[in-house]
Image 1 (tube, rainbow, N blue to C red):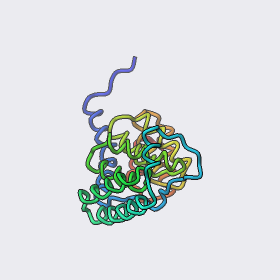
Image 2: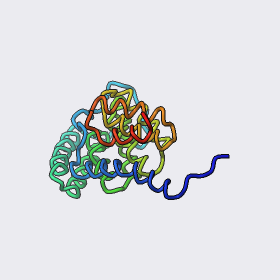
Image 3: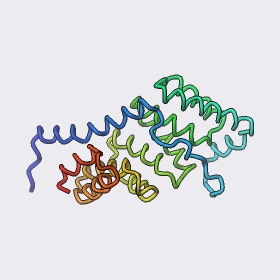
Image 4: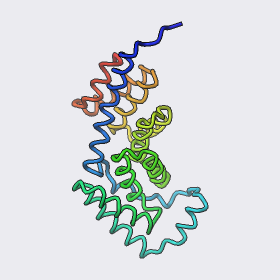
Amino acid sequence: MASPLPERRLARRRAIWRQPLALTLMGIALCGCSFDLGSLMPEKEKPQEAPKAAATAESAVSAGNVTEAQAHTAKAQSLAKSGETAAALDEFNRAVGLDPYNAQALYGRALIYQGNNQHDFAVADFSAASGLNPQKAEPLLGRATSYLALGKVKEAAADLDEASEADPHNAQVWTARGQAYERLGDRAKAAASYNKAVALRPRDDAARSGLARVGG
């Protein structure tokens, strides 16, 4: 039976993968909108099953509410980019209150929750945004980042597998996927992911460091 790794080595390995994750979270908190929020428009033409409570909320959403929610969302995005995350959160809350199916507001609010280390709330909003935009990589990447922070590595890897199929040219997805599989002990998948990230973004230090660790 293999002997366990010494505690110092384990601690060092944990610190290695936490650093790029912490930098990712910091970047989200500072800019508020690290991904293309404008691309997160609900795909209404696709049939989707929604919880009964959500269906009731949707039926109560008027055209005026939708328009007002979009205005609050735009204001929230501007505030988030300026670093005024508390005010941005208030605006996103107003937007979601007016239109629970506003994917941009849900996604933007999730980023703020994530930047505040409120990962359970972030996961809920990323999930809602992903449900409205099942072919978008950004909500999946966001949820995977929070899953990693919560220690739910298998869930993160599953999201990142899906995100890499949705947007195979997204270097952030491949770097995060490498981190997830590295933590799961799958060096082959980690190396393949890091290699993809470096090919797309040669100066990706997190991916290059990961590749060196897993021997890719």
